[in-house]
Amino acid sequence: MPGGARRPGRPSTPISRDIIEGLLRWIAEGKTLREWCRQPGNPHYTTVYDWINANEQLILRFARAREDGYDAIAEECRMLADTPPQDQVEVQWRRLQIDTRLKLLAKWSPNKYGDKVGIDHGGSVTINVVTGLPDD
Image (cartoon, rainbow, N blue to C red; front, side):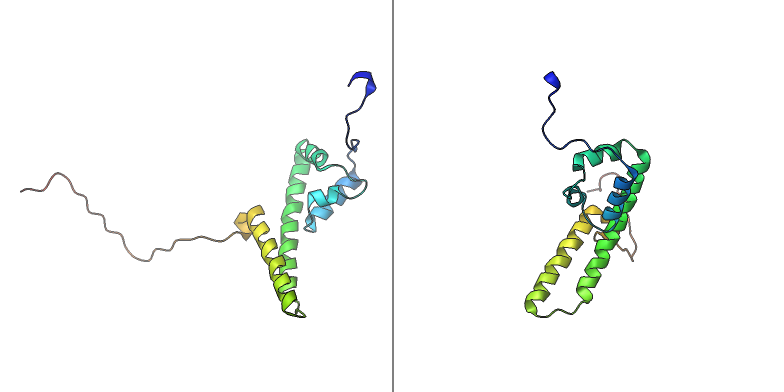
């Protein structure tokens, strides 16, 4: 920029092993990237995506951490469902918490957490081939 002026916004955070390891642990616990980025001292999420996209190994590690995080969210749903509620309001609150998490899991990881759709066929199929026109 002219005159040494800088773009407004957060200063660029250099990538470090400690930052990456902390981020991957956070994601593997089922927490969101943007929530991590809002923590003091952490870079903006676009910076993190720039780091990830520039490093094939980091792409794989981040994807694995996300998968682990989905499992952590699923375990949290089970814990919420297994904990006895105190009253009817808490029952409804827990149902909302569980339903929201399950819907997100189905969107984020449909192969693992989405609804399974299958078609079973137990009979036979008959095909009649008609050639030509019928006689009058």
